Image (cartoon, rainbow, N blue to C red; front, side):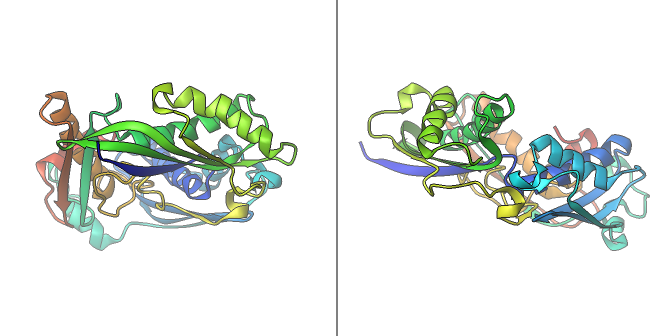
Length: 327
């Protein structure tokens, strides 16, 4: 049986790029909660002791951007300089302008359009992908990498591994074989976890805790064998993390946010964008079609594509997303 390897990665909520994604989405949520017609394109960047939110927002909502930034950082666990960022004392910069009137007239026609006539706010092409190799209908390599990252956050916050800090990355390589077009997972070839930690823990303790409290609860035993390779904090030290270790920016983890490298990607990010941005709503629409095909047992995996452009009239599929909101 001829097999091949495929690798997917994920990052923790404390990774600088993912921190920025969460801040941008928190701003979006705050706007939409008060004004469902808000037009939001919110970006975030961060580096040592600084977070900046910037972009274009047109809304009737009363939004305290600085409070949103600090609350989001604090909820993740950035509560002091030694973990990478101090939510209560870091510098917060805000540079928000209203949406360009040129874009607004293309979307709304100077507020003359009915909801079903709302146009797309930009061009783009989006893809959807689904596979029956997991209950989530997502690729196994992607599912495992994502769940390992979520488990790292869980055992950090519940105190199981008190030495953990917010930043971290995971990566899983799965061995597959191609069964007449169906991708069938055989085993987990490699597990890589790099996680931020405090000064009190040894590398041996890190490896033991990660295997016992993170890997074992996440990866089914049937996929692990004596040949599985484990790289657990292979650099030997990861104390400096978060924005102190690396700069962060919204929209730099687009493969993690979709299908872990499987299928295809048009290049657009999701975070901080209202539904008139087809990068987000179009990707949601495209994800539904392959899921429906799998539910009807038509295929074992499917890939679909949607193209949209800045327009005065949206497609029926996109209008449905715009009028019903994002799930």
